[in-house]
Length: 111
Image (cartoon, rainbow, N blue to C red; front, top):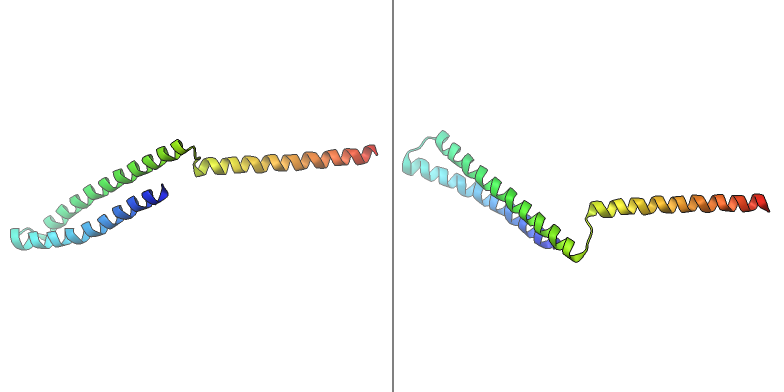
């Protein structure tokens, strides 16, 4: 499951890199072919990059949602839930050790 999420993220990052390069090439072509200014080309490129960024964010959110659903279906807990349970177990173990020490002390006093 995590491999799927990783692949989605790497694909999104790769698309961003390609889009940047292709976008700059497109601006150069538009400047020469359509006689637009550098400022107009940059504004166009910025709009394209913003659309790509929005698309990547949506893709990442959808992938994360699907991974969470899959983990829920498999009965797996999130990292946050695991960490919370681990802290709880450690606290209970410490309390148990403390109670055993008190009981041992009481036995020594009674003897």
